[in-house]
Length: 225
Image 1: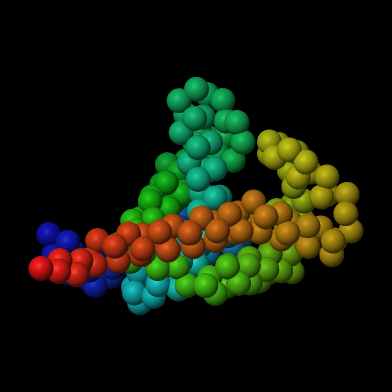
Image 2: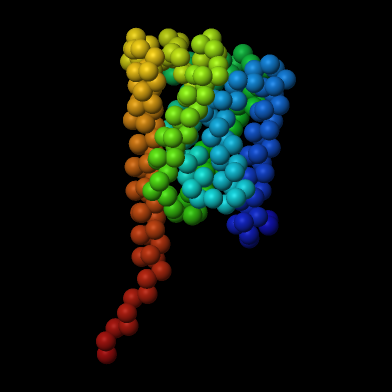
């Protein structure tokens, strides 16, 4: 296959697939009258991943990977465990059984974007050091947009409150904070449980992989006679 022989063609192919799925998500949300759903952080991350593959930008792909590394892992766990047992331990995906086929298909990027980004990371073995700052900044911008453009009833990205239905221990206590402190609290917790762990793990793994590559390709000096 051509993308196996030509990494650039493969990157653009995956970028086109991701972009097509993002446009499909846009169409589904517009047709269902839920356009505000496009501000969910997962959809923004899908668009960033698509641009990363299309432009072959390691920084954009690393940013998308940092965004979803923990959050999509939790989503995949909740989804697979819930469908297998009927019990959704985190309640992230419990409503997936109640949506129509189009919205169900629109949400499938939660299942494949993380493995695809991990594959790209494994192949490139690079994690730009400024990635965490960009992820944190994007999250701030998305949260502020969700808060300023949408109503509390829409509550995209939990910009107004943490629903009691989510099984996230202690998170609902943030609802007792004033608005400004609530936003700071959500941002701090997302950094603590999502962005920081992703940055630490991916930075360490990148160094380990490159060290292993260097060791593999190091030629031992000839033995003295």
